[in-house]
Length: 392
Image (cartoon, rainbow, N blue to C red):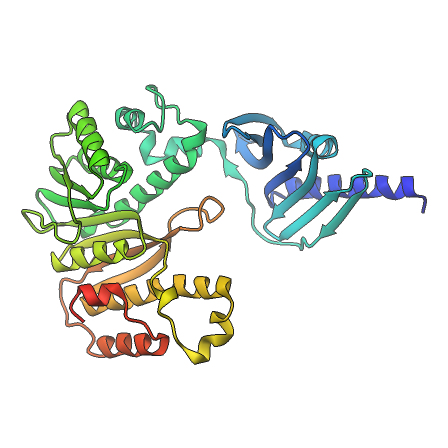
């Protein structure tokens, strides 16, 4: 086979892979990277369906953080992607439900393809109108989304804030899932370590506007500038049930027992402070997304796990999972039913685990749980902050 014919076959192979994945609707994403144009970071493409027709949405991320979107018919995607790849990118990753394929473009223009895609069941096509089903798509949410710089005044979400928008909306879906676990009457809700108060405003809006509940919402954080800004926003919005306090989340006590305690990405042991504070006040429901699991990494001393912990990267991954597993076990010791849930797509953030704890109304705590927790701690050589905060 001549070099020219081999190059053409490789190009055709790339087009064929894209065309088949699109036709089978198994295509999840295509990412073009290593651009020649340094004003561009990457180009991503994904399929969506609108009014029964299949399209591909192209998103070009520029170096200044701006995103440019374009939609093309799915039937044109294979030729378009191949043309963009050859003209300005060094690598293409085609990700499907059956695996992935990587194409590399050499300096001489030769394409090298490594195809690991296998036949797979299931489709990966989203509906273009999915955003209309978002809880936050309600017009009454536009005011607070605008003040928090997530959208314009008409509710159009800024490109750079779409991931945050999806994250907040997903959190509200999880609140909706446990809504029937909240008590009747006026609700007391806390966002501990509230930061910029994205969740504080979103959950308050959901409970008051969507559920028509009377709510006292408390946002607590040590950063006085953020607390001042959030207080000003609440006043401007007329959200009279919102209260922002600059102080220690662990020492904060609500005037009445909290129905719901939330937190988003409280760093390292700040998550333990949130969980311990919620437990001490006997919160009915806790929704907490941990972040930056550093404590256990500095403690873990378990010879049987040395084959993992001797590698710094694997050690941290183990500690991430073990920290949250210990938190779940310790909360069960306090009478909570606890599950770990994926908050958002891991492609958007690796910090995508949410701990959901619902306080049991009846029945004793399993007597074996405390010893199971202590055994796990001894095995890991761990003295977790949550246990210390709860008096272990």
